[in-house]
Length: 423
Image (tube, rainbow, N blue to C red; front, side, top):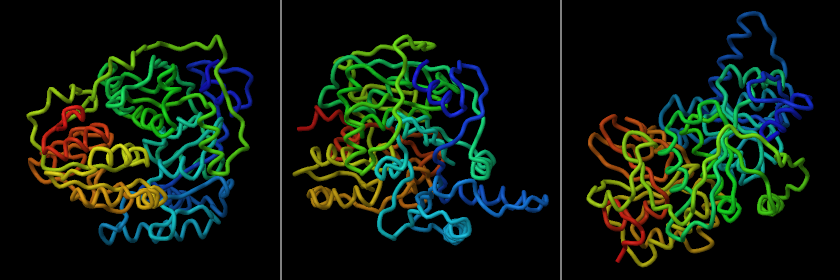
């Protein structure tokens, strides 16, 4: 069995499972945020109206909550949702609630690894489609809808159809001008946005082994954009060290058998990858950055769970140091802990000297809700993960997806730019 099959087998109390099997799996961790939380609360209210008593959750210690999508509150409704979420966590004794403006908080898919909320070998579900991100730690991680999350909260279990697994092997080490974002965009361009529908995307090879933990997280994050049920990378010493730095040392790693089966294997050479951009209006609509050098920009956005990890900000700083941006540029670190590191390491000063606007951790601009939405006909290059019509604002705006290096270089020139071409 491969790692995904073994995790689901263990979670369902079986010695063996195979793709296509339907299994009832015990969940180790579940996450809610300020969008999915109110939706789950609405499901609870509907159950109560049907005469079902809800007095406690299956295990509040395995539940955690993040405030990230509409913080700072964009309007009265989003403010009320935060209050609703706070009342919910108090009612059911959920202690791990990362509240906006109260110490550590940030984007849920960043907190999941930054705070070691999820560990190797676990079954982790969340009320958000990019829950896949945390599969980079060697967990089975996937997003669920409101009703399914409500069921997990009450019962601690949920059913899954065991997914087929597609294996993506990267040979060699990525060149300095290429990031994990370029690699995953190339993959999505190759297989399409439905190329991994209800499948697991597993990443490996020497190129992935060479990647830092934070770069690996970019790969699993964007498996959602290929329609995948989950993304996963087998744990290694880098993962162990990363978690140990966050005081997490006790967990049950899972690894694929040597004869593990994969539905298909794709193989890539790191040396052949180029800085890549996804054009509107799909992550599969890719082009080499240098082929888009005539595209003028109105905005550069560096943020989100995909592109505002600490190493992403370090990459941006290498480009922006000693330079000025030519278009409005926003940098929003993905968590307060990352913001603090950026401040302590002098990155914030580099950003400010370059003319960048720095904001708090939030999903607002990424999901087109607030904190920097796009107007009609505006063109943005972004480190985020989606660029369908209206994703970051007006339905007639345009978003190009790229790595932090490409976005930073483009901010400096005002046009889409390969970082190698900066003067």
